Image 1 (cartoon, helix red, strand yellow):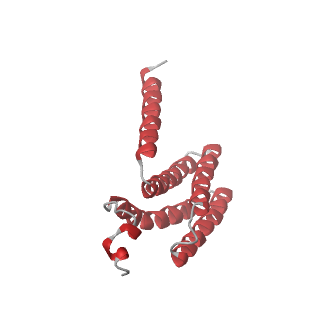
Image 2: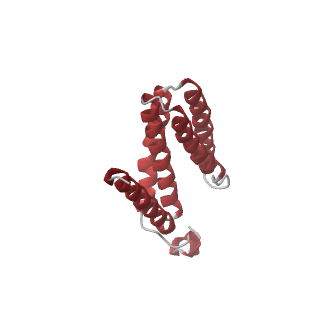
Image 3: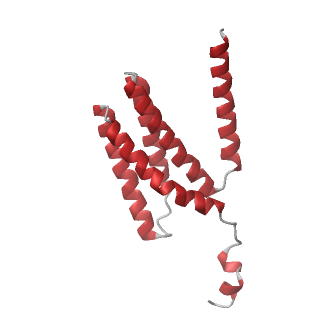
Length: 147
């Protein structure tokens, strides 16, 4: 095994271990951040594969992004933030549909479109994840006072 291949395998193993640690230590919102980042990364990798005429790998990356979007969609809580939830569900469905078209046509513009949409929302999720965790609202003094 040459040094370059060994380094690539080590790097991949380290990346997988780092991701596993991040997932186990993440809050629910932190997991959403990781999923958004994973989808964007998969779309960027799909673009590279299109440029290299590696269409099987391109399809796998687009499939990964679609799977992430479906996971985000089914995890939506329709009882909380009903309008936001509907908007996110529509966005995830639209994105999956557009990625199907991108996959069929090797369309990097669509991949950019969806990566940009996710990239617009990502900072909001990151900000939510950075906010200090507060106790249940029902236990807060305002809730106890009926406010």
